[in-house]
View 1: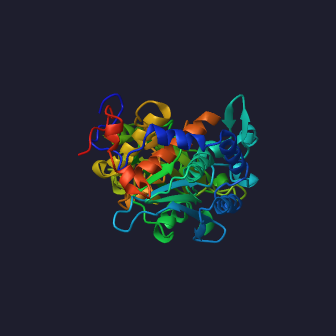
View 2 (view 1 turned 180 degrees about the vertical axis):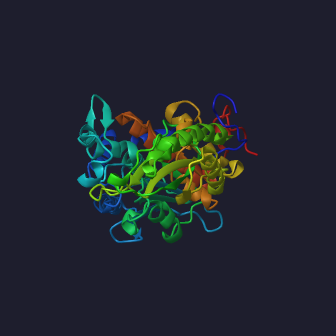
View 3 (view 1 turned 135 degrees about the horizontal axis):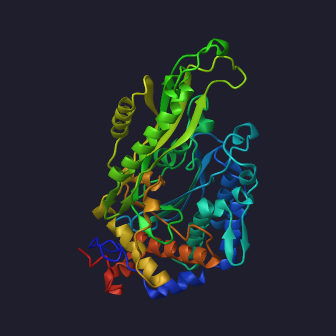
Length: 466
């Protein structure tokens, strides 16, 4: 690896040229892509309430001729699937490339009785939760950053390919999914309404009628890419003690001697803090596809019933989120946490994972043609090779994990994550379109296969065709 560029010894399946760049760029309208991103971004869609924006994406695809379908675990939370291309000869068809982005955006629950326990009033009042706007040449609003801005880019990329007259040999799948942000069913918050990733890209892959050779999770990566993704687990610590009627309580000399298990939380959180630092240090994972740095922090604490006071509580639950590298399993963290509790001498503490999602990475050789395609597209679009994304983007869950889990080589890549400009959207749409052309090929494959991409860019950091 040199200068942050993976050296995979591979190139894109099909060549793209400066003439292709010019033709596709001319078909991308900046005002149109900004308006689409703002329109999508200004439709409120916290997890569980994605239907309105899903319908808008469906209707947009229908107007543009991408034959959309709805496939969902429930009618209220559908995946939207459109297609373009797939017109190659039966004997030599191009590869299929799936783009995915999520419809939901991080937000409070908007249930005041819940949000009051998590957010300050000024945080709840932040308009960027559900509002998007253009100001001083930059786009504001969480929905554009995550993830309807990148969604707009691949939608416009498909329209630009069609407008510029490019028929694709392979299929370009355009997918918009619910639930990637979350939540997760935990405790009494159970059922489909609380499901996240199970009903999004994961459901789409199994029930959506898609057969991709490669996949791209379109999300902000500052124009870098990675094929590494972390997983996570949420561990519930059940800390047990004794409920004692307050008038009968004999004040112990130290908090550690108190029968109420809430008093153990200080020692437990100190132990968790030390454990988390060691977990972060020992879990770092580096590969040719990116750096994964799993981290950990306490998500929630629940104990007692506020209105049923008088005898403390016998039980307090603490919930710990733990990142998992592509090489780690939930049992690795389970054993380590159990040892931590034993060493701390905290008495009875039951530990159980209530959410588990492992991380994944693509096989470097198998994902190389897709990475080569993004590199050539980036050179044409931005004038420089593609770089590996910042480790933060390979240290979280993104939906390329779903496809790498199922042996579909997948990456995540996209525009500037924070405060993107209209030009960023245009550049990203151009890169997505050129990547698609380099993966799927033209319907007349003789022209697109005439020369490898490395012949167009002899200084391609991915080397020559193997």
